[in-house]
Image 1: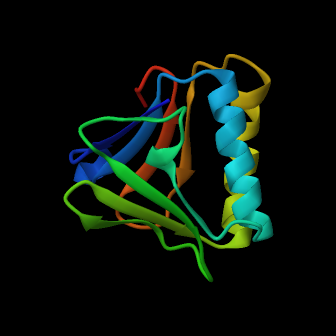
Image 2: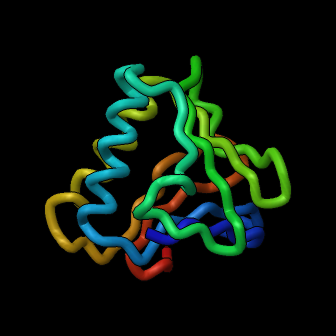
Length: 125
């Protein structure tokens, strides 16, 4: 799974996209969302996972929070995605179709915050 930041995403805002992945990659991401939703994990550095290939040094921390803040930029290529337990449950549900079949479409994972978060096998939306 590739992890990349595009400064010129939809509506002239930034975009974090996950693309070029296998079903097992999406299963692993869904498991992380579930662990964040239940609180068994409080945060994870997505770029540190063996199945994630960061592009140009992109870094994304996924974090359990009190509210759905979405993605915020904390450095040139450093980002945090903070969602509540309900927010991570929602992400897990949004990933479900990508876990069950070789879905070729795309899905916005959160619309909170100024920077969008997208999963798309082909990298398009």
